[in-house]
Length: 282
Image (cartoon, rainbow, N blue to C red; front, side, top):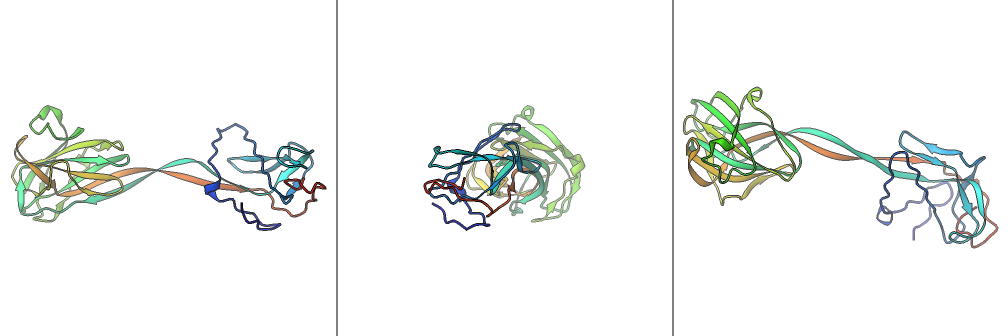
């Protein structure tokens, strides 16, 4: 049951009462609206193919009226629906550039960190900024692999290098920008885990002691950072659990529903059916 708004005003059908109906492009979908009393407003038109309303997405074509209860009585041709059609045309992908900072490190430092990023939606990692605990010039190498780092801490062959650069440290708690032009972007599909390994040529990479291996220590709506390991050697000397400190710069892709509406004329210039049981003015 709904409360009628009266002639000249649309009566809103609550969304929760109306199931979604999908229609392919180029197809025709028929609708039948029935009331318990003859109070449905229509407009009389000239022919069966009369186009009531249209826009770039849909066309609403002339229909018929009934003089009796549901699917009964005489059918009266050339009757135009008065109302509004609310619909969704599909999805539009939107890409946004974002950043996500973790803790900026403590007094601990090592040659490297391994950790995992789990994507909660499709993302492309564009850059990783790191925390170097001194003001020294250091060489940075960053590697990645499909899936978790766990079990591959000493397996050089499992990793792909995505950055090689020399930078100057900014001291504790201050991230150092990695040259984006030297960084190979990494795409991570929603629901997938990607391992990362940040390695220096000096033991100056800041980190924080973690809670447990595999623990999600930082997250937002796009990604989760998972505790990993520190390394005292290049691909060796692994200590767990450890939390990487830094900033992830990435692009995220979202699918946004595009809503639209089209309306037919809302008219009160109609005649009533002679049948008091008619579900609509026909």
